[in-house]
Length: 167
Image (cartoon, rainbow, N blue to C red; front, side):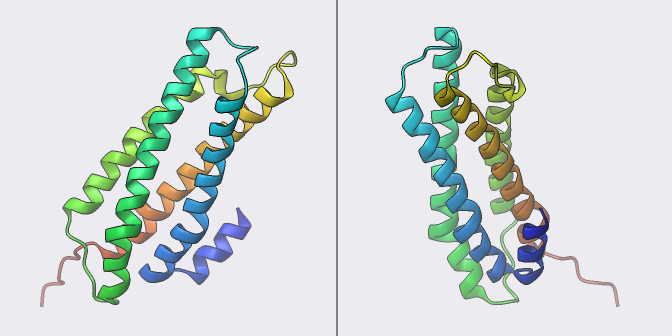
């Protein structure tokens, strides 16, 4: 966490936060998703009941889809507008609301995954590949929450419309 505190202190302006999100947060989230997707494409289920395994896989694919779509919107439209708009750029209020709703869907998917996977507690009898996958899902959840915090607590409030002080 100390590493992130330093990075956030260095990137507190909107352009710096956009760069941090693109180059660090999104990259790390995509890498985790890739590792998990590889597991599901290469390994057969040897541990969990089949309906649970299929539901975990389905929820993960939905989460990955939501992430991909939001990253495309941010990288293709929102972040370039913020970077090109300069320090006085104010984002229309509907955009952060829409992003917040999408991120809430992701949080709900993560909660369902956590419930299905017993809070990511690995069992001694599980194969090492499934343990690694469950650990990666836990790591992905943490990364997504960190990314959401940066956007919702730092980036979007800094570029949202501010009320003018009364004179």
